[in-house]
Length: 341
Ligand code: MN
Image 1: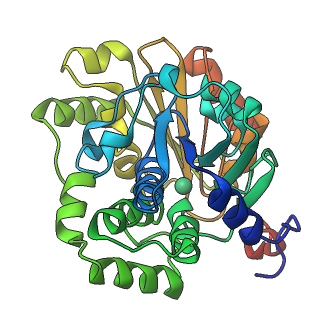
Image 2: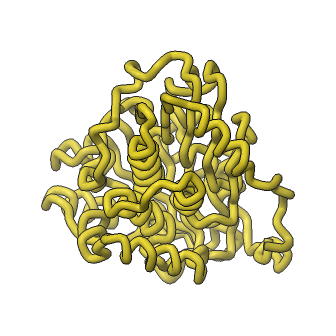
């Protein structure tokens, strides 16, 4: 891929195979508040390593609760609470985490690991870890995990394929985002061949929710504001969901991931933003761009990370102030060089 902003070093497959080959025990961790790619690729790799005879622990930082939409993923018997992970692992592997701080309390375990393999595809990856399988051109971390599993010689079982497919479908927005390359569809084909049922995965990930969720969504859409002049005149649409909004309908925080996909449909806005209050009173700010604005750069400026078209940051600041700050750093349109980058 030409014209990328950074020159990314080659992926260290040989060193990764050597480290895994030498280990009897492997600790895996994905980023906090795991999505389909983080949890799906971690559980897929954990099952493959178990099949190769390794003792495996897989975890993620607090809150240690698998989101309702991901409870169908196989391999959850390998999950342990973060406090029960070995404090100083011989080999640790992190998945879909752009920086050590995305691991929550498991960043300490990673810092003390004898060997740390980082598998990720975020442009904003900080460069942490000793052995790096980091490729921003990969559509999902699960693409890299598929390659690792293949090189390790593990069998692609239907359970492993299901985790990888959940990652691939999640990070391509169900095969709709620009990262949906021929290679993505080829991997999807192999995973379906291995036993994945796309209709069942799609229903679990996107097409079901309790009635209360629809009420919360209706409130969020009702509060949405459209600012046509923002984002360099390309338009911004944003809304908020407070803890009280969702507690009134008994909807947990992790069920709100799909709200932004409804909001971003607005024709008049290039950028969509949803500010969601967590149980701790932090505000998680999700952003999406349709292609003309680099929301990743804006979110990095505000202390977060992500991709050019999908990024996020956390803050304790009041939503009205946060939107002011975000409006100030959102600029567009991208010039041609940036779009091809
Ligand atoms: Mn990902």
